[in-house]
Image 1 (spheres, rainbow, N blue to C red):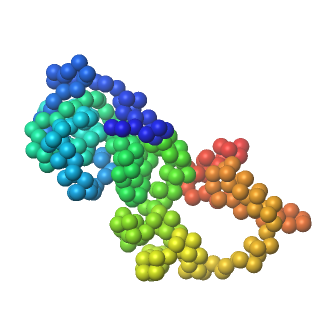
Image 2: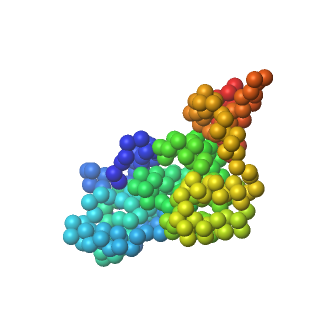
Image 3: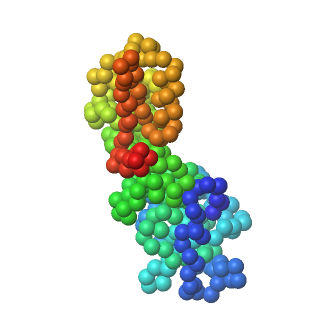
Length: 282
């Protein structure tokens, strides 16, 4: 699997090379029957591009599987796929009976982590699949957002914002999966009811609204009055302070400043973000 600098720990760091149950070459690569390899039950990716699979299958017919799959020993002589989902499917399409593999031992948590890391590195997951994978790590294995972020090589804010997409309505999620809207569009609608989200979604798609336009209309839907005049009076100095605070704390910060003092409002969107803020402020 081609690695990308800074993205996660990778296979070698997360799981050790285990004792192999079949004869392997000096390089640690062995041939295993395709029918003995089962799909990773923790694989977050559900959909694969059929045209891409056909192209990969054609390449495999001509050149073979260049990069070995990674598997873990299962029960009754069966192996669980850790990395190489597309290569396995394409190999089946190409009619291969066996494929080259490297055998490793992995826990359930590692199966999910490694499948997630491989897909994030390849940018194969849609935003909802990625959010659900993060949620599984958080709920099943009690991992904090910061720990998840370190595993996949992304910022904690990015992980938290991605997970927030799961609060969108079913229609908005599907539009996001289909590529009809962006993550920015979806996040702009999260404060609205499911009915309001769907009404706004139709407008976004029908008139090709920008994220900025969506944010403005979402505020209108939620009953917030525009504050353009008040904000125009805010000095450049206040804007600069807000920007510095946002950069330092990694979240939205609003500053109200007057002759007799003012207030600083710090926003957070989950318990994880609150814990992170407390660590920085105390």
